[in-house]
Amino acid sequence: MLSDARDERALDGDLPPGMTDFNVARTVAFAQNPLPILMDGYRTYGPVFTIRVLHVAVVFLLGPEANHYVTVSHAQNFKWRTGAFGDLIPFLGDGLLTTDDEYHRRSRKIMLPAFHRERLAAATATMVQEAEEAVERLAPGDALDLYRWTRRLALRVAMKALFGLDPDRSRRDADMAHEFERGLAYYGRDYFLQLLRGPRSPWSQMIGARRRLDRVLFDEIARRRAHGAEDEDILSMLMAARDEDGWRFTDEQVRDQLMTLLFAGHDTTTSTVTFLFYELARAPAELERLLAEQGEVLGDRPPRDSELMSGLPLLEQAVDETLRLYPPAWIGPRRALEPFELAGHRIPGGAHVNYSSWASHRIPEVFPEPEAGRGA
Image (tube, rainbow, N blue to C red):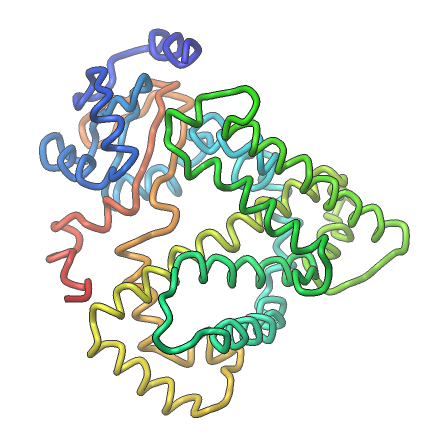
């Protein structure tokens, strides 16, 4: 907190106008439901404004122009690692979400072959099998915690596709899934609780989960290096990958990339599928259209990979609308390296800068009647 205060005092200029006073009630409200506060800021100040969240003043940039500026046209002026994504480092390590510059570019390039269309298609059988088994365990009339059910399904698929691990096959694999969930739980705790340190704090529990996960991961990496295993999962691909200069990931770097992929590969899927079901439950006519499409295209057989990617257009539209309403990566925290100007405002170098697709997708000038796609 002291470091953040010093950084703000060192800024070479004023921040844009906004809700800049120290306000604990606003911080609590923002942590629980930020969208109304962001939309109020947009209506009052326009696409660029400042909100003080507890002790940190954050500049929010909303709308298509802002999103393009931060992520495409001037992306080199913004750092992930020194923004709020840095909070993920203690658990995930130095993966794609928490690194910048040359190491990020090099890592991304060396990982690309693992995500070619053919590789993704090969995971279709795992996805279908796990989904069918998860549905078969449901009984009509039972109450269902949809988010928990979806999270478990997505985690199982990610573990099999990334690590070749099976929670049903060994106690070790089941414990790994549990520890990953336990570690991630830290980021779902109240903001004020995340600041605590010491025994039995959420921080301590997260660090403990990381240590236990690391023992499993490093043991598996060492086993495969010793035996020259050439499995088809992404772990083996990352261990074997080389760039044109012969550079490869160390064991620690393999671990960090895997943890990041496991986080990104199941957490985002969980929220998207959950919200898709939620909206379809509120729009029975749309649900009937999707079921009719599924019956016409698939009948009683499982989908092929080509059908999952492009053969069910109504389902694809429903997923796209779900992502508009509930983007899983709802905010993009960055830190500006140099001063810049946007929408008539000068933002100083060193400022915390966030774009928000969640808020941008609800701007009436961009999406007329932005709530119209929701189930009634």
